[in-house]
Image (tube, rainbow, N blue to C red; front, side, top):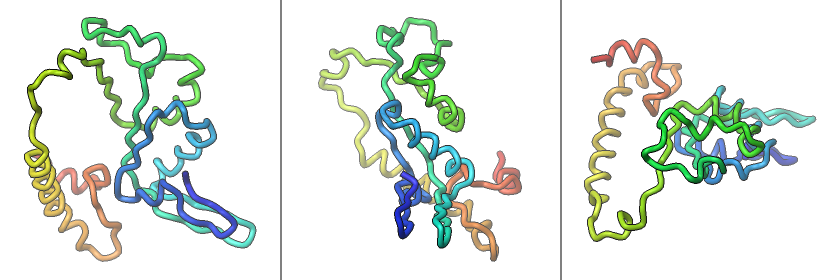
Length: 173
């Protein structure tokens, strides 16, 4: 996940640098894999040390994870209490996930959709419309970061999450 080997090579975290790393079925990952993700998420880099040398790879990622509800939430209904989070479970399934989940900024519970709603003939928004919105948002971001990225010696900013406090103040509404 973070790389390694006798001759250190980058892992998935570095290969996803300035992009998205998607982990499906998060609780299925071994605990040591989840633990090793914590530091790169905080630092934006991965250092692999070997006897003869050490190398640092970039790891500025947007981490997106998916997991099924905890077993006690399998009977969840939309009319159930909304204050209960699936991440509040203290079972063995999520116990090892807590340190990693604490570093994820947004947690969204997606309720089950009844089969009748999934199987109807109504179509959602066309992907070309969604693509157009994403391209427009990306163009706005590029324009926003042109000023910060033109400064010599500064780290390039590629996403809103990496904005510095002075950039946040100058772009605030």
